[in-house]
Length: 125
View 1 (cartoon, helix red, strand yellow):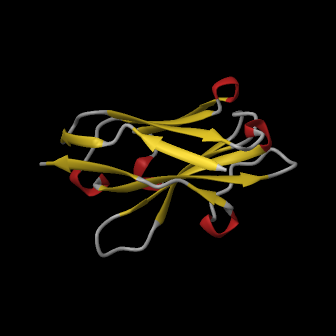
View 2 (cartoon, rainbow, N blue to C red):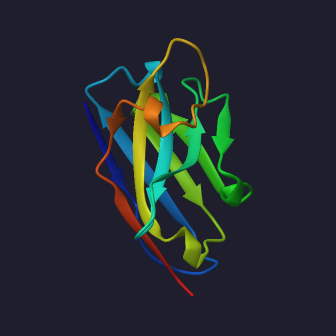
């Protein structure tokens, strides 16, 4: 299984970025997907999650209304659209996958089985 995250970069505060995570080696539609981030000196934290079908999502409070998670099962890809970026959003962003039979948007990182390599997002003030 491979999860390849891309789309990170340097952006000014107030700007936007779109992250993508392409999956291979798994039946993508059977997996819930999540985005997590880790800032320097901090623990990794939950950002957003989406259910297998895409019908259910969850967001960390600080990104609600600014970030949108979505997925295209046919392309085996999950996205994170990030708008109105703030310096405190600076972190390495990781995508992750969790197999599930139900249709839930899981928020606990301990539940996720597969992890991508991360992509750096830097927001300048």
